[in-house]
Image (cartoon, rainbow over all chains, first blue to last red; front, side, top):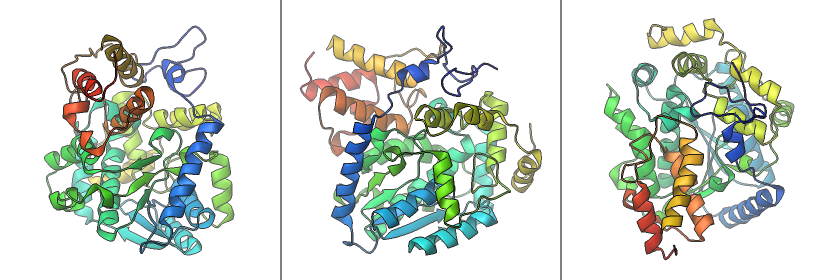
Length: 332
Length: 84
């Protein structure tokens, strides 16, 4: 397999082309934010934080998986910006015990209120089985993440928004790494119309294909009609902070966060991830984290060699089988 | 609006289609339904339009009738006063 000489994307990645120096077209087209751009967004965020602080029961709802990036983001929101955080964690039935311990420990440390939502496992099992075995999403969506991860994140985003609307929380924060989402969307007003676009690419395929009723986890028509002034502003601060995976890990480990040993190298909270990666690679012949890690490498947050290792290392088959058995699916 | 259309096509090709040989950009076809753009892509597109053409896209303008095909995008920019 050949890799871009600058990032980690392999020659199996959709639409990839290399120039004479082995640099891929994705690298050539990516616009990395410079220091000035990051400062511009940082300043905007500081003003935003000051404008919401203390005005509602919670200043911000944080999509908190217990993983490294969301832990670091939550810590920064509470300690650096003095925001009162509602830490929203979605238990999909595969959250590592250690991640649950991290959630309790870190929310206590940050003075954040923890809210864990766990749908009945039978329901999650059914939709994950569908996501593992059927075509749910468009090809562009699957360039960025596996079908199983896209499904889970669909629930998270929707429940975060639902909770923010119900509790009048002005900010909704995510720990997206610089490779997951561009700086240009790092501070963005959510709105019903934007949500309808999102619904059409993730929610609708889930609801259309699920053998069990899942609509209660998504926005109702009444919620979709809440005036836009009450919709939260989405923020993903890692896009405008100085991000380095090593520094993030060092910081949160110094605070008592412990990396689970039962998750694959690309996840620090979910025991389903190994199966999700395995199925994606079997089907598409590239790693579902390749897009994200390529972005982190371009942004200087991870060394290319480490990125290649993370996206080529074979899954631990005992982890893959554990998840497949719980979902009752046969491996290809 | 030919130049504007070319710029939009270039943005979509460079950011969403990339080198995929099996995708033909049809100016009348839905970018979402044809799998070219996802919900993150919509955000990227909105940001591109606002920055490149120096316009503000209001919430009520974030509808498929304005953003989901190349021809709709061109017509929308025309309505927003973007010159050819």
